[in-house]
Image 1 (cartoon, rainbow, N blue to C red):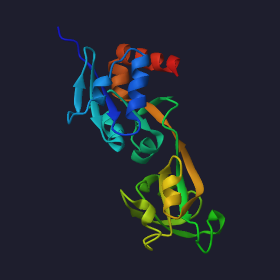
Image 2 (tube, one colour; image 1 turned 60 degrees about the horizontal axis):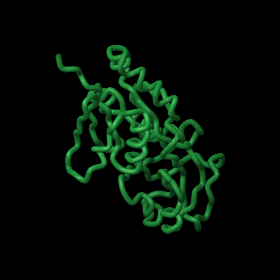
Image 3 (spheres, helix red, strand yellow; image 1 turned 135 degrees about the vertical axis):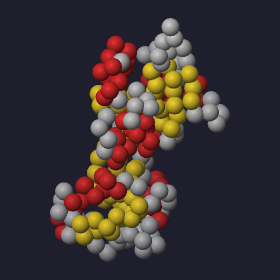
Image 4 (cartoon, rainbow, N blue to C red; image 1 turned 120 degrees about the vertical axis):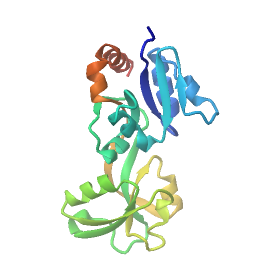
Length: 211
């Protein structure tokens, strides 16, 4: 009888190499996902790996198309889906920040704000952050070049993911506040944790020992 393979959803981009490295350290070979190819599904003897956009990892896991996945905390919080999140994987550190032009007339002070016009690709987190502090946000959703929004008068400030801050500085912006510190997390489909417990739990334990 053919054994059913567990499916891992892995994020394209900045987290992929570290994710593959971590999995290899616990005996899971996902190196095929690093090949320069247009393939998005890869298989080993025991696992199936799907390569998807980072923002889609929680969706694949939540709906059971993947049993496990690796995603940034920023992505998990933005999607707001009920997935089991057992481990902080300790890589992929970045900050989700409020940023503003360096020459803004009134520098950021949330205690003085009642309204803010902000551009971001994280509308859910942004709305929750400002409303919890009594500020009404007008959110403009952008999914690229968000840094230029204040410079063109589209918004007063932005909320974006920052690693070094170099791009902000190059576009005349500065960090004004930090909303959250994001790292990569292991996430698990809740049904898979129950129905495939004997397969899923040893993976969680092995990764926990490794980190």
